[in-house]
Image: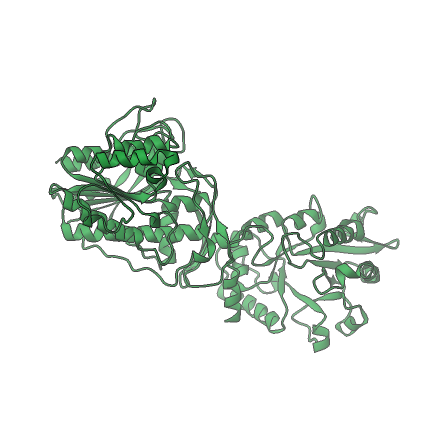
Length: 640
């Protein structure tokens, strides 16, 4: 249990490479292009130097024939360590209190006195409680001789040795040949049971001795690193410090685990968002947790795929939601999502006219109009003039009520494509001005009070304009049915990220918006619901936020499907405008809801995204197609 708690405490959102859940050991460090400095820059907490005594000097090399008079232990390791430790006022790294281990592997036993002399020359660095720990390995003296050496000298231990308490007190770590415990495993997949139990037993024995353990001679790579971490290996041996460091750095933002656990305080965020969202304050790391799995909804499928008349359409867009974002949410929730219970599934490409990778503007415009668009364009022609009618305009012309709900800013690209037209998504004041002129929306819910209430942004003029067009203005998106007529609800509860306390907010607003739109027209309605911050998480390299935002979006999907089952004449379509981050799932554990994942980018990618459909006509959304087919298919089905 103590070990589990220690591992959970390691799931900390980390802002620097210095903060890692394990100690990395730079094996045979002297073989690096820049010995010591490469390992130090990657914050390896343990660095190894093989040494010989030759002509009175302690020289560094793996073989005697490779010795060079310039490669002394002092100039390669001791002097840099002393200089850095003193310049950082008693610590090795400016941004960390972590202690460094210098493992000196004696290739010749006669080198030990010289190593001791070098270390004793700098007692402030090597003899203090928080100083650098020197551990002697290789041709070490017998354990009975450990007491003959100064207390600043520690020794590498073996599980096969029977140490007295006094001798064990001088052991700095346990180092074992991994191949003595697991001969078959190459770092891919899972170890065979017998070898796995052997490795576990070795780790347990070292921990019973109260010592950290390091395996040398083992495999490297993503699976190997994660396996060693899960098993509780304290010091991970690596011949690839940069690769290992990259894997373990920013560890908290690469891991989600279901259940409450200690995380490092701080904010994970990005300043790389667009004008409507660049004031996003980031994800508070401590709040990116869920104590339990979320409940899901199982549809009845009574009218799924039927030829019944479609009165209502609910289009749910997970901004930045790719297949792996969905899979991560499912894995964290014991492979259970409402979304994944649907039977009609398609794949859409979203390449814009002017580039290979789309954004929310081009992708959203294609979803809204059924026509290919340019990046950064909001449902417009190339010159910014009004292009093809969007779905809100089209449904309005049929006498149906129309609404847009976004868990982001109302002027951000995805909601904007359903009521405005411009060639630049950052033209937020132009975008919102359409609400006071030609917008066909009956309901708009999201964040962004500045557009209406800040005199510096002509907010008062916009407020007067929307009221002149018959809109009521509200701060409560959960009470729109109590307000007669058309409503713009700018609810600042929709601005922050989802937490356990607000996980159902989007679902509740979706349900309230459905009620509102039904009250406005007997002919039916069109509603677009956006889960905006799956995208923010990708831009911020914040995987825990992605999981929670995905689960919050799934709750909204459940709300839409529940209504569709009650109504029988509602088509529900769920998709994304694009994928953000190139998310890759690396490993995990179903029982604990632990998922390890990395983003390969902080931007959009060209990865295909799924389309899910439910209700009358849902089978028409299966297959593979360009994103423009979604709006076209909706229109064709509703027009029947």
